[in-house]
Length: 340
Image (cartoon, rainbow, N blue to C red):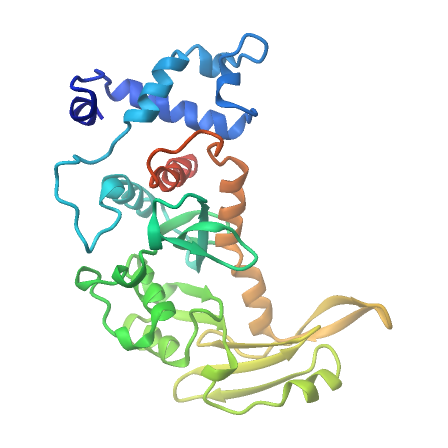
């Protein structure tokens, strides 16, 4: 930051470690105590002492303008488009990996809101979500994040990532990359949705890493024939059809709820069949059969969504002008310090 100030205005702003820590603390407080404008934290009528007493507003704006994490004179790498914040991302990944982990994980995407245009193709859009940066996350059912990486487009999986089977496609490569940091894989289970799931991926994880896994799967990736959706829905809620490959230790189950869902697993199959409560306008409340594979997925898949929800509750304010497009991602990594 001092070096960038010298490059920009010809002199250092003389910041130090303690002041940068205070600056990050102010950003976190702004995510907890929201105000319409950044100046309101220092205004006489709306003054918030825990922020205003730490540093003057002019100093805060100065640090916001000069904040840097990498020397601008270092040549930018075409392979790493996140070189500006690479030290922060690597540091936070290391901190997350040091947390004592559970043994049941979910893998999903998370979005960091960003509406600017300076990020180019790094900015992604997900239907029913937001426009911004896509981050793939490996977390657990309690909402803790153990590993993550930012999606950079075609350059996401370069030689350095050492993905063994690139022909699996993007979703499978994400799972393989995030599973590399799992400690003691034979005692762990990984859950993911149909964007990531394929039969070849599940078999590869089980055979090469000893990882058991479970996920929903798309029809065009099944490789086997199950009862037609319409026929299964006619049989009513709770109906299911399944196939099991004992040699591959693989089970595929299609279950009828308000619509059909297909799941595949190397962990569980249909038995034991449990029960779940459902409601319909015609029949009212009813109890319907639920295969074990569905119950396992519902109980353990929502960890990343829970983490996303908790981060959204304390997201650093977006009403401060962002001169640098990568600061929203830095804000997410700062928020991950809350769990540490």
